Amino acid sequence: MRDRKRRIPQFAFYDKAGIQAYLEKQAEKGWMLEKMSFGWVFRRIEPKKLHFFVAYYPEKSIFEAEGSEAQRLFWDFCDHAGWKLAATNEQMQIFYHEGEDPVPVETDVSLEVEKIHRSAKKSYLFTYFLLLVTFAMQVGSFVRQLGHDPIGVLSDAQLLLMAPGMGLLGIYVIREILRYFLWYRRAKKMAKEGIFAPAKGIGRFWNMLPFFAGGFIILSIACLGNGMTMRVFLGLLAAMSGLTVLIVCVSRWMRKRRVPAALNRITVIAMTAGGCILLSIGLFVGILKGEMEFGGEPVEIYEYHGWEYRVYRDELPLTLEDLSGEEPWHYADRCSYELTEKKSVFLTKTMGAQDSLPGMEELPWLRYSVTQIKGQALYDWCRERVLKNYEHEQEDFGGIVCHRLRETDKRPWGADAAYRLYVGDAAENTYVLCFGERIVEIDAGFEFTEEQMAVAGERLGR
Amino acid sequence: MPRVKFQTLTEQMFYTLLCLREECYGMDILDKVPSMTGGRVNVGSGTLYTLLEQFLGAGMIRETKVEGRRRSYILTEKGRDMLEKEYERICIQAADYRRIFEEGER
Image (cartoon, rainbow over all chains, first blue to last red; front, side, top):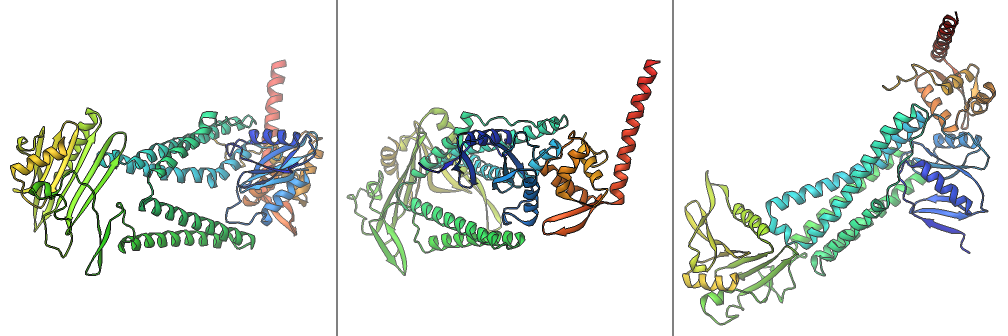
């Protein structure tokens, strides 16, 4: 028969009545709380009726060893009154009493509520506020990105799954913070009558919410596929986890050696900052060295003047050969043909690029993207944003040059609408074409003839 | 409106300070208060620990002896004044009670 068990009870930090009742029930079943870290550990005892008391010791710092002189004095006071220490978890101190009707550890409710509040500010609220800031930044960045580049966001399945995950966690955290402050207000009011305000339960649905959010986040990570993005993500995750474990171990070792809390705090801050800087440098150097190419698998690596270029041989819906009437793959010895696709439930964005390799006989470039959007309303919004994103002012030799799209003849393309980019008064070979619920953006290093427009429209628009 | 700290004393504060009229170990106050009040008032160990910290911080008591973790305390002049004020406040309350009920009976 096992003599230890581990449980992860879901109690709010300040739900002392709930925790006490739970522990008393466990003792009646023959389980005594022994430790509170990575879940609560219970050891087997003779089933008995015990009284538990959850006390809060706000002076405790996470950088300080368990059982400082002052904290031990507090335990001595409790011990003198018959309250034995069962387990501690930072500011939370749990005692038990074997007597019939013991005097509670706290007999002044106002003082007790203030101690809980000071403890909450140090741990519970601090963590939740930190999470809230992180979620707010994530949501802010998502909304800004969505407003600026809806196609980029709506074609990114990973981002689309990550957003609801983060949103649900954000809602959970906001609710928990609000719940705490509502309880605190009620508790202060009731303390004047000498009554300790009970905390309301988290609720079954809300208890499950972090798991739903976690599901979305796991799905979004799975969307990264098996490529370099996934490898970089896993590498960063491993590095961050390693760094966290290292920091926790060093801090715990310092706590055990009773190193002053201030020195422990400085060490943790320095290690965190140093670790983040090292990770950023590693990522930056990796990208500079070209070891982190995020595209698909190239068929070969082409070297020129010490630089490496990735060469692709993807089937493109439109090539320079199609436009010049040459045989397919006619330029294959001096070009890379790269096709990438991003897909979500809202739209599919396909990007094609045919670029000549450096050092070879130069060919004009051909790049385009085809976005197929589901739903007229979404299409209208994306089209408006795409057209707007081309329009901006740029400083050039002391003057301001306007980038503007002008409507152009749609017939040669066979499109519903066609726009051409003008920088100042100079026409560029950049077009935005609309076909049904499809937006095509095409950019080439040559002037399109009417025949080429017809071929491009045929290949990309239908 | 929140109570201004120590402007009035709770029963537990009052009896804790009263115990410290003579030098006394902090922990012993846990037993002294109920025996002083015939069991009517009890001070919890956590509450007493906090009160002693607050009284020390406010200069109402001072430490007299430290033996390991055992510490003894005694009331300061300021603490004595606070007790005196509280006593007067209670006396006024009692006098008001008597006056109002005696007038009512006449």
